[in-house]
View 1: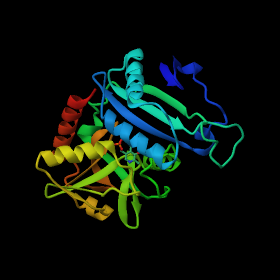
View 2: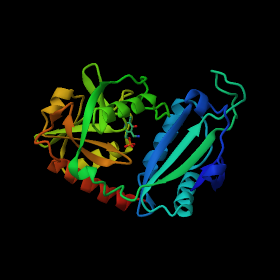
View 3: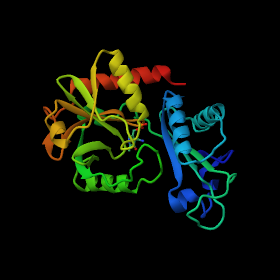
View 4: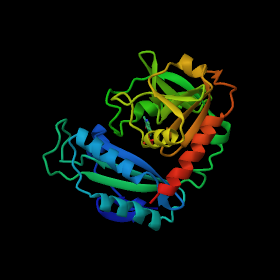
Length: 284
Ligand code: PMP
């Protein structure tokens, strides 16, 4: 695999980052995951806008332009013959020598890493036909979940706990209400209305979420943005989640209780189709 590191393309074995890098030592880094279908990049502008916002919120600078970013994405797709899969992008605050809580001096170059992950069945994931099962867990993450940092230890723990319980993923709960999934935004459907938590610092502002809500509104579907509980989700007609790499994924069981009939429902199926169609059309 050919990867990108700080302005250069190289075989993955040759890509080395300093042991002093703040991404490694402090989790001081932000990232994006963008999907590729038919060799084209999905939701590029959305991911770049969110990256710029994450960087700004952390007062991190990276002087790559939009055109340079798209060129790197396309070059990696080309060099790795990527038809279907993802591109991982990470910007860390770089390193200024010794470990120090304070940010390094202005002008310290960030560390920029991008690489591809091939997933030949990304759009045709069999799980989308069966639906997935989730457990709920308390949301023990920090309170700026709108910034897409690499601090993913708690989501990792949550996914391991779900696996140990024989389930696929976890939904986080705070103050009695569902925030989001371990790596996705969550939704329920009741009487054909789509309900999903409103945006705030409590959740990541999903790029898939933004587009999906736009497409759903264009299709005259009713949407309500508000928090909901696990009990309300269990009693809903359908549940699903969205993320850049899973698109729209039906959820058929929460904490051992089936959602609706316990099978993939028509709204999730339709939204997945709309999302895949529209985002393929808009891919660049
Ligand atoms: N919430 C969290 C916590 C996530 O990690 C992700 C995936 N990165 C999402 C939501 C979904 O965001 P997106 O649709 O931009 O992938």
